[in-house]
Length: 109
Length: 112
Image 1 (cartoon, rainbow over the protein chains, first blue to last red):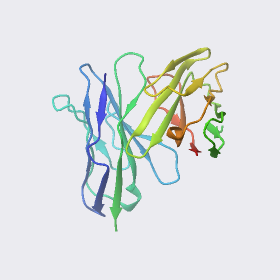
Image 2 (cartoon, rainbow over the protein chains, first blue to last red):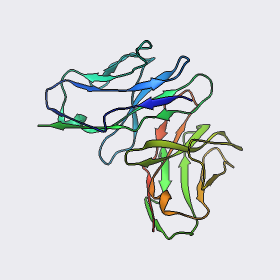
Image 3 (tube, each protein chain N blue to C red):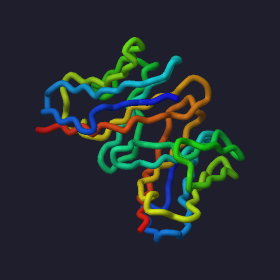
Image 4 (cartoon, rainbow over the protein chains, first blue to last red):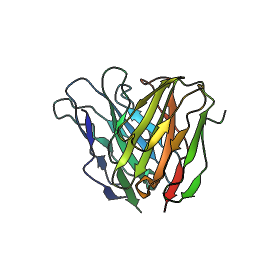
């Protein structure tokens, strides 16, 4: 069965510092990877997906099949980036999303 | 267009009580799902539905029942609540399994 691992429960960085939220997965096929974000008092929402290869709010993520990783990166953290971030995987075929346990990002002014 | 709505926002139950968490969407989405969110455990899938009349179990289905009689509604039933079911419950919908999921605001349930 597929699994998503986010090794950090909490990540604290200073404003303006680079951010990397780690996500590793276990799945033998070709997965689809996502990052979802939950800001304080807001709904969980999609941040980005690997197939779109776009940058959202300055965040990027590259799927590395060799390392089975999909780390989320931003060169300069902003206070408004403070939120809970979830990495999610969808296996091939009609299967539901599997989420990691999440990483809480705290950006300190 | 309200998106995904959930009621109630908060609920306190006693052990053994039953209740139904409501979820509705007005986007004509075929796929709907229920997750529970617990500290340190992330989001875990309880049940999901790929269309009216079709439901399937997720990772943690025990203690929960669902039905999908219409495209719009996907209620989650707790037949006999237990303290282990204290959690925040999220409903989500999407046009299909391969699309972005849209989440509701959540229901915070406490079982004493």
